[in-house]
Image (cartoon, rainbow, N blue to C red):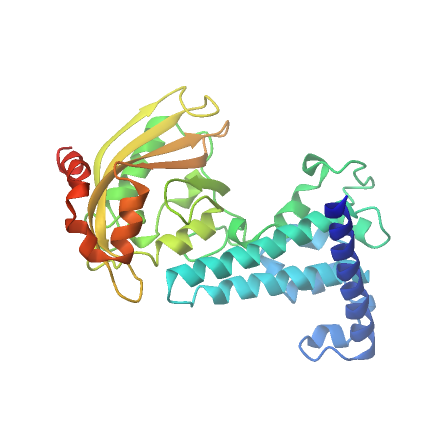
Amino acid sequence: MLRTMQCDALAALLLAFAGWRYVTSVNGFAPHCSDCRRGTSQKSPSALAAASPLETIPSVNALDATSSPVAAALDFFANLDRLYERSNAIKCPFFRRRAADLIDGAAMMAQFLLIRHKSLPGISDLFLDSVTAPSSSSVDDIPTFVMDVFSAPGCKPRGRHIKCHPDGTAQKTRKLPIEDIAQRINRDWTEGVAGKDKGYYITGKLDSTIYRDNCFFTGPDPDMPVRGLRKYLSAASHLFDPRESNAQLLSIRFFESGGEGGHGMIEVKWRLGGVIMLPWHPIVEPWTGTTYYHLDEEKLIYLHEESWDISVWRAFIVTLYPQAKSWKIWDAERKNAHGM
């Protein structure tokens, strides 16, 4: 009951913001947006889409952006996209991740509120699919383009390491044989842009065409789990110093009918170590681990599951206090890592 009241209160705030955006747009009190000063009611959906970063998603043009709630929602998510892009300039990986989480959280809350209150006048315009609006609250009933536009920025096909078509849609190579997918993963590990053993764990650059944009990344790292390929690559590309770090592929194999969904899985064993880009630049001695790449029915990686051969406590303590790496309590783990 309390949660429902909180959500309704947030919805009221969102609708109030929508009304304010409408009043300011038609009366000329929105100095940050020259298009809005000309009046939202006079603007076509394509013109509104072209005025924001959402222009890279062609399906935005299908929205009826002439109503004030639609205009407010587009403006709100466009601002979140801009904030997300700016957050990549934060040098400290810890604070960069916190900023990304905050922005993604705001986007997911706003998306939930829009779906929950989709029957209200104006809001329903967002969910018109042809001539019929969905009647239930299920995400499966929401038009795909709505979920694309109003999703968390970290799950959108953007970023310097995400391959896209000229129209802004993500490039995907679906239904590849699992052998080909394994070869591409192999290249991501062994043919990094920074040289040998400088794979995507170091550079944040991989073949994005074999991943779902909302791929789920999980593992022992305290900053996991992560939802979204863009969000994961942003974190990976700034975590290790590529000049002083290495990510070595030890072995790779695949299972035709393995994985969580039974559509196939690739297993990679690796060794990773180097300098973390924290203010005190801690040196992390090499440790080993395994990554499992789970495929969906389209043969895209939807789950990136990681395990370590060292304890989380050891990794955490040594990062905070580098001298702790010589403590004898880690001898057993150290022998196991070097014995592979």
